[in-house]
Image (cartoon, rainbow, N blue to C red; front, side, top):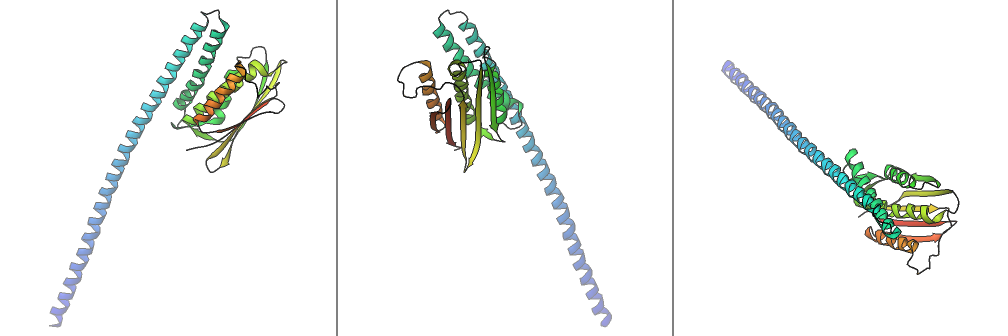
Length: 248
């Protein structure tokens, strides 16, 4: 009887151990299968994301090329007219288009496809615009830390900056030397401050005349409204523009 009881206990123990061992083996096989499925799904997702990235880059590349083509056509058209006003208008349009094209050029070359490095963008755009001032030596002082902004905000600020630098070149500096300071800083709670200063002659902010200076100010106000920015303009040893805006 004792031997039979012992035999049963040993048998039960063996069966129990076999059940545990089988469960462990099944768990290991299932875990390995799950890991393989997860890895396969991850690979598929990475391939889809890679294809989307390539497609978006191609779109930005084509947009940039098309904008540059339009810019080139505007340049050719501007040379056909002897009317300075028409030529100036076409040149202004060309600069606006070039500032937008630069955004798409940077998106094509950058890893991120939704935000722009404002330091790189402002430096490149400012440098290109300043080169247009053949008779002036303009110094750009850019103070922007690591700030990345969404494409629509970067594009709008580029249009504003285009107008500001162009106006400074045309109207601000009486001598051959000028200084332009550009600052973008993060204030907090998704709020940023954009500040532009030149050391030029300033302008009459209360003027109602429809000249190019006041037209430029109206354009800047219009662009500022696109990003719901609060605009403050003042004469402070030259013109000073400050925009405060929140990312929404």
